[in-house]
Length: 113
Length: 113
Image (cartoon, rainbow over all chains, first blue to last red; front, side, top):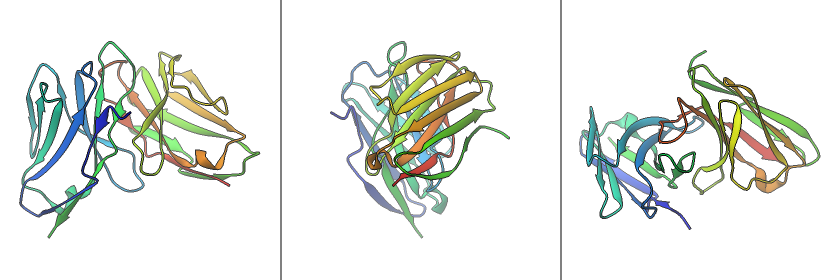
C-alpha cells in the first residue's frame, strides 16, 4: 500500500504560468517532506523541504504548502520555465523513526513554450 | 569530484555473473543509502548505513549484499540476479539519519539478461 501518492502522472503547463504539483500521504507519523526533481539519466536533485511544524516554505520560484489535517502537500512553481520540465517526486520521512525516504511515483511536468 | 558519484553508470550482466556497484560521497555525510527504482514504481529503499553500520535492510533478497567500508564509500555486491532486478540503482547520502535531506548520485542503470 502506497504511503505517498502522486495521482497525476503528468502535467502540462504553459511557460510563465503557475505549476501546481500535488502529493497525498497516509502515514500520520511522517513529519518531514521533500520535493525532488529528476531529469532523464540523472539522480533526483533536492528542491525544497518542509517540516510538519510549518505550513509553508518558500525558496525563490518554489513554494511548498503542507496541510496536515488533509495529509496533503503541494509544490507551486511560479513562473514556470522550460528548464522546469522534469519528473517531480514527493518524499516523506519519519524523524526519529524509520530511516530513508518514502517516495511517490512522480509527476512528469511539461512546460509548453 | 563533488557530491555523490556512482560507477558504473550502466551495467549489463548475466544471471550467473557477480558484479559490484560503487558509490562515493564527497560531502562529509555520515549516512548512506541504496534505493532501487523500477519502471513505473516509486523509489524503494533497500539499505541504510549510519556511521558504517547497517541500520536497515528492507527485506531485500540476499542476492544483493551491501558493504560500507568507511563513511564515504558504499558498495552493492550483486550475484545470481534475476531479470526482474533490472532497474536504476541510486545511492544517496545525508548528514545524519532521520529527517535529513538526502543527496542522490546519478544512478547505475542495470540490465540483467
